[in-house]
Image (cartoon, rainbow, N blue to C red; front, side, top):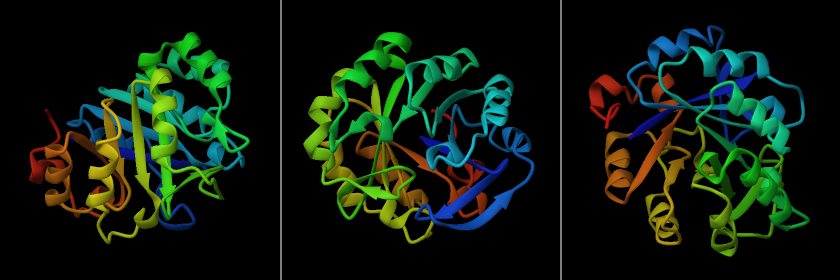
Length: 234
């Protein structure tokens, strides 16, 4: 299944290359709901909040309330209260990345409190990886940890993982399918793959391996469209 991504920065839906250089921007954020109406799930990520540079809460609230599909929200969620507030807006799941780690290790105390507050089934943990290492703080800080080091400890706190191959994010060069196959073998929980996915073949390979595909640039540029792939609905 393809999951479209709306990454918010300064009130616009943007696509960044490796989380740094802006490649495109869409002013009509709410208009994307019509464009993505045939998809069953939508990812909304607040990049400003993730980088500690502001908040797009106003847009996230409206997207959650006006979307005719399930919405998963991430970016800058660092407290159980914040997560609960987003759930109250109608989000199906919240996606936690940086806050899942503290001082170079899994923050079990925070994740336990989070799972207790909103329910484990509503929590997804983001494993954003560059050069094989987990990235946090808006992809500005690289931990020594690898996904295989932490997945066993994280599983008890979440209902699935969003794994982004940051090395190819936004580049339209394709993703690393071998890396995702390896990751898939590490957990029995659902895994959503992201980062550089650009073709129907990649979506098919990921689905065959039991993973959904979160796609941004390839959809915005028209390289990959729901009406052409038949993967919008499952």
